Amino acid sequence: MKYPIAKITAWILIPILLVLVLYCYFTPLQQTTIFFVRHAEKTGSGLTDTLSTAGFERAEKLAFILQDVHLDAVYATEYLRTQQTGAATASDQGLSVTQYTASSDAAVIEAFLDQVLDDHSGGNVLIVGHSNTVPLLVNALLNNPTFSTIAESEFSNLFVLDVLNKGPQVKLKHLHYGD
Image (cartoon, rainbow, N blue to C red; front, top):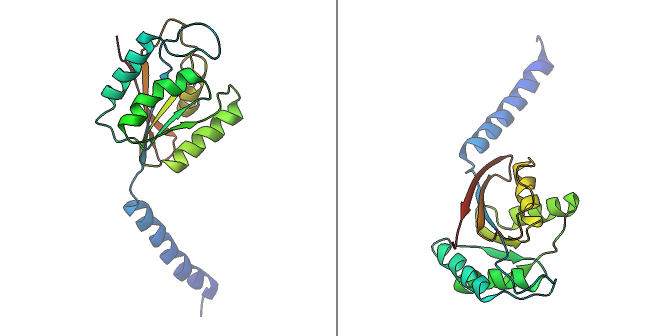
């Protein structure tokens, strides 16, 4: 018997490879869509400021825009203005706002986004942040420093990222709402 180990190895490896190929072929791609917005207009410049009348109106417009999207979760930072921005959308969707910690630390951002993608794989999520944190979150998913801090007077940015199988394929749509 010539090459018995090679034949045995082939008989073991071929079925394993076949199973892997079939698994990859029949496993559906999971696209998770994440909507990122900065909080709406606020009453002042302090950390504890509430939304202004214009801010509450913008929050309602966001809820209207997303009314036909089935959201799995709404995330907002610990600050009242982000919680209020996400509240109308969350309420319309029968959800509560889940709090996350605003951070500029790359490791914290990566851990948060990994958790969101794990918890809501194949779903839709709204994340409300700040002028400095939203670009960091978007850039982390794009794996590219595309966006810088949003101007203090800008509140209409809506970043829609379609993340395929937790990346690295990410499609970006940069829209504006509420103006």
